[in-house]
Image (cartoon, rainbow, N blue to C red; front, side):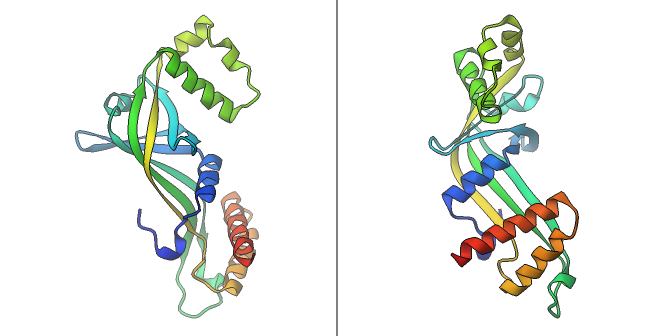
Length: 204
């Protein structure tokens, strides 16, 4: 991913928090040189430096995943930025956003206790108080497991960008935040919040 220096995210904690808060990602792999993509919920384990997920066996993408280097894209809030908000001559429109690209080697987990453990981890991440995993030995649960395949991605690198008008003076950033807050759009509001958090962090 092309990331200008001023927009790079380098803090491991910030990157981890972002991925976990925006964990519905896009898995990209290739088959015979043709890219395939599937939208999936992921669990990011920064301690083990891995991603965990699963997909339907009916999805042919999994058949070529084992051992392949893959890309997972995590997208965060994004919003159009009008040059009128800058109040600076010779300005152009742009788009603010936060995103992370995770690269790693994929290992397929097909059935058995390893798959059951993976599914338990996914459920616990998204629903800590769920009783679903207590039913893991029930026939209907095991039948559902037969219809899916899990996989682990051992992460080799992460590239993350937060393009939030950092290259503009603080006064300009404040005007952008104010206009985003008036947009009555969920994405714009989230970008404004991310910009505010960034400004506050830099002010400390």
